[in-house]
Image (cartoon, rainbow, N blue to C red; front, side, top):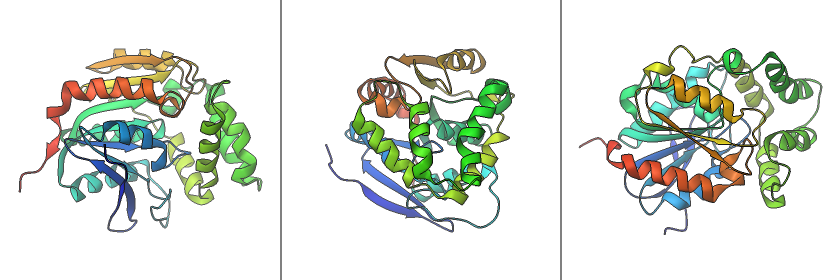
Length: 278
């Protein structure tokens, strides 16, 4: 198995940083609102013998550039398309967690021909349709208001971590998550939160006619498995796996179980993804 990642930068501005490893059909990973590309390293290593695994930093995150002006949620989808074009990918297996999954649902609704399969983990499909008013208030209260009041990400980290992982989450994973939170940039993070509040894809799920793997943590309080059960009914070709002893960041808390589900699913559909012929 390859042991190191290659970092690529995708232009034009804002440049997108991504880590690439392995060879074979392309699989692209999109992180959550409080994460970055390093959150997927266990998945990238696990797939690298059989697939080309690519994980990005979304605009305003990690090693990717900041950007001027407001953010429209569709900007993330446009960025994903230019990443696929950069690597001459015709169709990719697409994997997203939380915000990353929401990006995939939005871009698939308008660029379905670029999608081989979807893996959607620990996510909701509409801010108002999938989250109760209490959960909507909690989502914003926990993240935006403290920053507006002058708190730092170091101040926010303990409460955020508790909301995202299970009570028995390993200390090393908690620390990894804390470092991801500390790496966030306040203005880009706030732009993303504001763009997320208006997110709604419930009317389009029936159009996403691609094999879809749903993965939810059984202890996820933000996006519980009940949302996954709703999505199975709304998507044309979806299956659901619920991971024991995992909360919202199921790929970090239970990487072996997550990787087993993902690898099995991708192996079944590996030939659907590929590159453009020269």
